Image 1: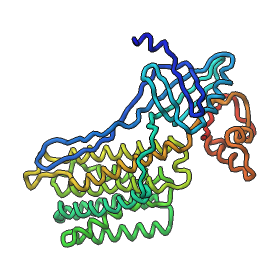
Image 2 (image 1 turned 45 degrees about the vertical axis):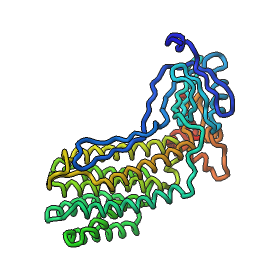
Image 3 (image 1 turned 90 degrees about the horizontal axis):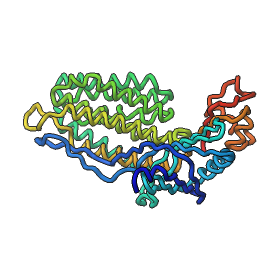
Image 4 (image 1 turned 180 degrees about the vertical axis):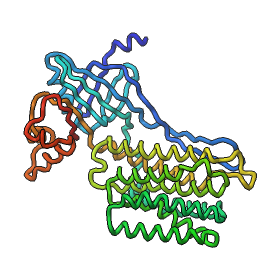
Amino acid sequence: MSWIDKIKTNIEITTGDGKVYAPLYLITQKSKEYNFAEFVFPEIKGTLVKRELAKGARHQWDLTFQGDDHLDVALEFERSADDKRPWRVYHPMYGNLIVQPTQISFDASGINTTKITVDVIETITEEAPIVDVDPTDKTINDVEDLKATAAESFTANVDPDVGDVNQMQNDIGTVYEIGSANVLSGDQANEYFNQFNDALSKSLNAASDTLSAAQSMIDLMYFPAIFTSELRGRLNILRDQFLALGEQLSDFIDPNSKSIYETNAGAVVGAMIQASVNPIDGDFGSKNDVLEVIEFIMDVYNQYISNIDSLQTDNGGSPQSYVPDYNAQTGLNSLVNYAVSQLFNIATTAQQQRTLILEADSNVIVLAHRFYGLGVDDSTINTFIAQNNIGASEYLIIRKGRILTYYI
């Protein structure tokens, strides 16, 4: 079929409840990522990239229902989209697809049309391999194993001198200054301070007991992962610490200073993974919340890989050579890949975010009932108000045209 014939064909969407819709559509892009791992080896220039199978492609579709009954058809489509089973789609440009929607926005402000923007991810129909171990428990155990591996690698690669001890203490002070300014719990503040002092004390003896110094320093880097605050706040703290550790990246010339950076910045990345498996209520309220966490973590991890790659020398054949530690890096890579795969599993079952442009004047009670139903404790009203940042001026009336967000 020629491309001309293809664009004349409508998209056809079979939702999870079996209903079929054929809206007008715009030709949009799709994106695809691959599961991969990077490896570097002593005395071998370059990076070995092991690419595995592709992740599900992502699409953002612009759909339009038109005609006298466009509002009714759009409402029926919205109800069908609430079914959690995947959609089967024939797309003129991309063929037959099985997808899960992650976000849908409705705009019925047109005279004779309802415009719908929907984000989807291509999905497989079979469940992921069944494992006996709980993913959270596995991730926590893997974190502890990685911390031990990182400390052992540090001991094997770093023979600390006075300058190295100064760098370790600077790193300890830098991350603690950022973290201590954001810890909310008084008990945790005390515990964090004790960990800070322990890391400082042991770093002074790093030349004689390198392993203990490394272990205490790494524990400090991980500590913000368990702060009693919402996940995005913890991730922001850890990202700020990561960026601060790399501010003098170009000054790391000798292999010891590079290994210290590798260990501490890698620990911060690991702490992000630990934080992601310890969410509090509301952290993963929607699919978009989960996908944003995945993107946040991967951005920092990819920057970390880029940073240590820039520090690497052409080979490991001289005393001034630096090559990232194989065991520490493969352990961190496995931890990141596994945790992200589990977050994607959470995303497929999380709530979908919906947005619409209000068709007529209304109020918070009517709208809360429309989207969530009303409870005896007014919880759905409070939820709706919080999700839409509704202030006192809108308590009595919400005007036509207001963009509203809700979750199903």
